[in-house]
Length: 291
Image (cartoon, rainbow, N blue to C red; front, top):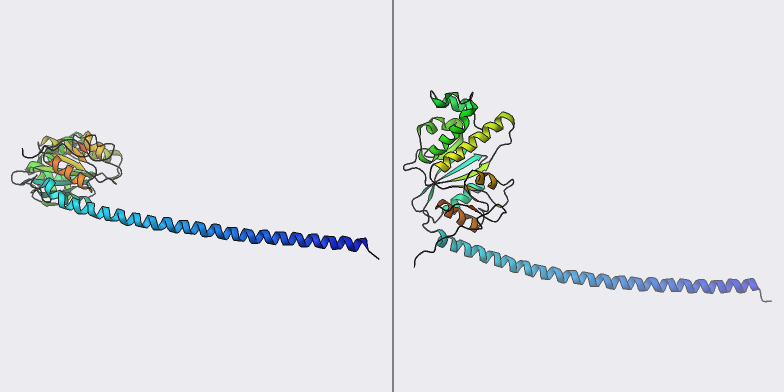
């Protein structure tokens, strides 16, 4: 006898089998779809990576060519531009081996030479400086803040032209120096690198007064004074150089910066480089040579 319950169970079994088959088919289809998509994505990434590698290799080749060209062209740009000139390099605060090397590199082929390198203590030890100065106007330097700026002015002038006061106070004033403090004929230009110490209160007041006076003395000496830094220098000291009426170069690591430094030491005045503070452009105007 036909049992309705048996028929219902058979029908349910068939439906369940159909459902399972449908799910398996969809799962298999999805797996194939994912596999195909993954293969497509991986292939695209490999192709992009290959193109990027080719582009990078091309750019490296162009960069190498540019560097080779610059090395060959630089002597032609600045050759003999500073012939016979003696240049000073003054660090206000912490010295920098990188900037020291870049300044010396800039002077290569110009005929100029670094005749003096000095690192000024920042802020200066006024008591030690006053003791070294001996009897005279600056004996009371430590107790009379009004003397700090005039003292800085005097030092700035004597860094260029030499003088007895600078010779007396060199040891407490300069943490280190190389070259003659009284160069024959004086200096023909000075490069300034400022990296002030983080001080406050009275020490900051002394630091500001002395540095402002020193800059005024350097500028008043009648020789080109140029403040320099690299493109990565932070914080930038260009605003301070401009405030003190110094010429400035903000990209000394680049051939354009080194060329600008040479031209500024030759007499061009302005703020040169590629930062927003370079109000005079990338390079000074250089008059053509010959007819």
